[in-house]
Image (cartoon, rainbow, N blue to C red; front, side, top):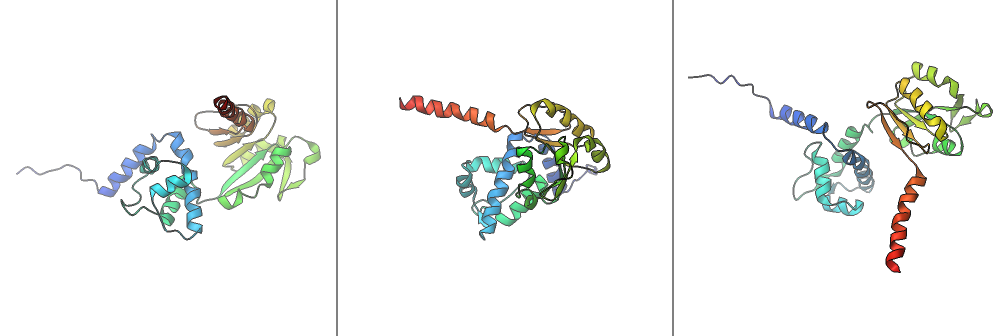
Length: 233
């Protein structure tokens, strides 16, 4: 009798391999929805809710139940048909996937009105984001404490990044200076950048950048306002 010499891989390992393969193909739009799901689950958890259906979650977020199930399926199997999702467990898993179960070191460059508002925003800390260094080129601001962090000369940015690892950089400088600041952050090992400058700096493929421009956001919104006015005419 011929002996079967095929390699038998345990089911849990097969599942992990399947999830790892799928992770490489996850659309960015899905990643962007995960924090929204996590926030909704955190609200439910704070209210003492222990189970939620995809239908209820979808109504809360204006997302179809099918979309929620599809998004979560990229990361494994959650919930049971007819019973819904266990809120604390799913919240914990999403926080692990997003890395929200650890602390992230943030460096901010640019302490104008916007930069100061960012530095003083008290919503970062509770979510694990800690502004550990603040830089500006205005000598009048050097040594000033903003939200407990001392403003440093922008010229010190390169040396600081070489000596102190930073996970995320925030850029709040004028558009003409944004690319240079981003380049220095990338050279200093920063692999995630949140850019508030009204421009779109270029970064290597290994770096993730998000551009936040409220003016562009409002300009896109006026299309819908204008369309609505036309419809009413």
